[in-house]
Amino acid sequence: MQRRFLPGWVVLILLLVAASALSVAVGPGGFTGAKLSAVMDLRLLRLALGIIAGGVLAVVGASLQGLLQNPLADPFTMGVASGAALGASLTLVLGRTAGAFAPVGGFAGALVTMLVVYALARVRGRVTVTGLVLAGVIMSFLFSSLVMLAMILGRRTLGEAVYMMMGHLGAVFTGTTVWLFGAVAVLSVVGCAWLFSMSRSLDIMSSGEEAAETLGVDTQRVTKTVFVISSVLVGAVVSFTGAISFVGLVVPHLVRMLFGPEHRRVLPGSFVAGAGILLLSDVLARNVVPGGLPLSIVTALVGVPFFIYLLRSRL
Amino acid sequence: MKRSPGFWGPRAPGLAAAAPVGQCRPEGNLRHLRNLRLLCAAALTIVLLVAVCGHRPSVESGLRVVSLVPSVTEIVYAVGAGKTLVGNTNQCNFPDAAKSVYKVGDFMSPDLERIVALRPSLVFLTLPMHRQMLERLNEMKVPVYVSRPADIEAVFKEIDTVSQLLGRRASGESLVAAMRRRLDSIPVFADTPRVYVEISGTPLMTAGGGTFINELLARAGGRNVFESSVQEYPVVDPEAVLQADPEVILLLHPDMSAQDVAARIGWGGISAVKHGRIYDELNEDLLFRPGPRIVDGVVLLAKLLHPGH
Image 1 (tube, each protein chain N blue to C red):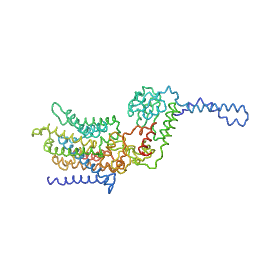
Image 2: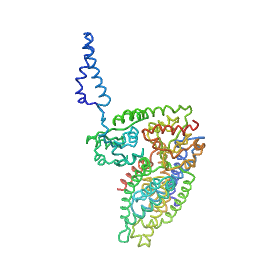
Image 3: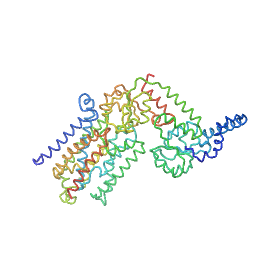
Image 4: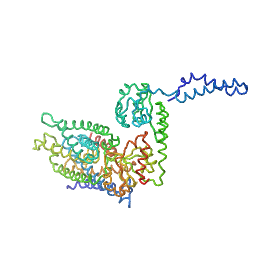
């Protein structure tokens, strides 16, 4: 760890610690004493879910942005988040027994989306970056509509559809689903570590696909690997939280401002910052308005002004 | 149904003839008085007849009714006017006969063309679900009745109105009387357990005050823990449920079973979980449809909340 990046790391880790502390301490169930111990199980699980979800979304966003050399790439614009939401919705609509396997549905939905996006972007045997982004955006729109359709045909309330498409950390775990979540958490850590191990290739890829090939990087293989890992991680996370937007898009940019473009710093930085920002958003979402808000409302309220600032300062 | 001024026009002479009653007394002419009495009686009879049935579409055979509201469909059958029903929705599943009626689409999205093609003389719909449909039907001058009961009392009133519209006033009255008797037979319970109603598990959603289920719970001797919510069907934080510590949990969605809820992590301290008072597989139509079976819903809840009685 180079010395000049130390302040950045301190800031990010302090952010995560403070957000975690707030997330555990503040909630509708009260702040102190006996009341706190009664809701502790809930809050700790919520904390774990927030860290995993925020971390995974930001790391996947950072990897996709680097891989595709496109500042707008994230789990949302690539259609993966919507695809995962669709998969999770379908399992929910299918009924009680299937509903417990929403993570599997979400994972399958994300994987299918990635395959479709990849196939659509494949022209004359080659996958182009522009093609991937365009196909991703199109699929994202399509699957968002299909989530709505599935919810309406499944006679679900619009509220459920909204929360599926805008995210929340209010998942209630049972003995079975907590194991599934544990598996997802392990998978997430492994997946993020795998992406981290590809930092060097991602660095070269982000300087341009052709340049990367002349430098001996197997771009097709790197693209495929990143895509599969991304869809597995996002699919698993979204099935628990619904599709949370802006974390995957904005956080990597924020981290690059602190650490520069090198992925061996951007990826772990994104994990920490993503987790911290998502937890903070959740603290706001559940405490400001009684009953709580869908998470994406808060992440968008925070993310959009920041993104506009980013846009104007770069012009 | 408004009384149009034009409709009363032809009866006006009869009413005018009834007017001099007060004036003729001082004269003391008996025969004259008897004639006047007869006239008065005749006028009164006409007025009463008109008031009772004259201004309503009482010709049952000519009625072509389309119901876009499952609860109204139930009312139509319950007052014995099922034969007038020429169209209803996919959700109109009670009584069995309602299933075989021509379907004009979903409750959420009925098809205007199918409705109009039936040349209905009356369409039942509800708001806010059918706002656009209402506007279109108004434009096309198709008679509509908007069903929007806010509480059990309003359901009684609606059964009255619907039965009159269908020329089945007597059946409507006896149905309401029977429902009232049944409702009044439910005792007032001294203890009112705290109840959490879950209508979705992902995320947790419940029913607030101002909803039908809220009133049904109150009538059945229970207290909705989220009664104070302004929203009708709010999303709730799992922590808020822990805080409210419900003594009974009613699951009104297919996502989870009672066992699943009992196994929720962190929920072990809730009274309902500790005492195993979580109920699933309830007939949701009894609890959500403001129709003739609404009292059955109250009875169902009362039996769950007060098993000793």
